[in-house]
Length: 239
Image 1 (cartoon, rainbow, N blue to C red):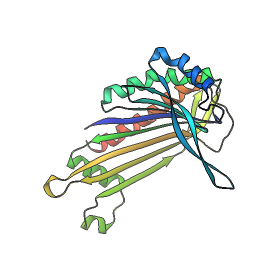
Image 2: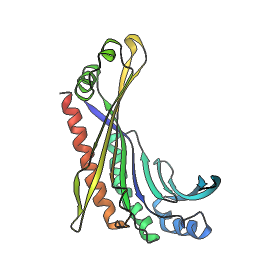
Image 3: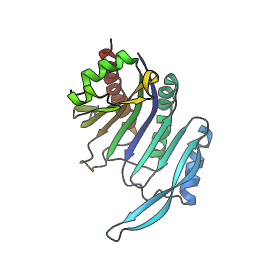
Image 4: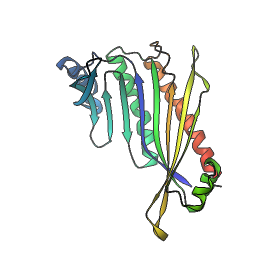
């Protein structure tokens, strides 16, 4: 059984409210990334003020790279770096090469972060027999859903391991995995699509700005290894 990586996103959280869509910020972004093919853009963000519940629409900076389905969104409380690619061999290589770009964003504006996260969606290209094995292993047995075909099912798991992100820093991570089964079509033509969504992140309860640009790749490398191990486990269930 093989698999495809549909999308991957690396996020660092913090207070980035001052990085608005002003001409100064846009100019800095353009000068820093024009040689790498990224162009500045803006996106609209809806902001709700408390306790009045007044809503306002604000413009936020964005970096886009045409043709690579790669985008960096600079939001008030987070910066998302995302890439979407159907070819499994390409998305990981491109994602890792662009991590340097993400570090450059942090360096250009002297940013630090209180939380890091890696999310990804995989599609397992399993046949019917392999899918049955996974469902029998991962899902609890309810007689009703044995007697009546379940068209959707989800296995949700969360772990909290202690991980060494650098020589000077050990962190508890949340490792979230959702395995989703969905039947598409009817009768003899039906197929079961198996999707796995990962969310590996440092604890949001710690608001200390303890991560800098030098921690970004170390965190990604650890989180990606965790994802790879879980994928290996899922594949082994089907063998």
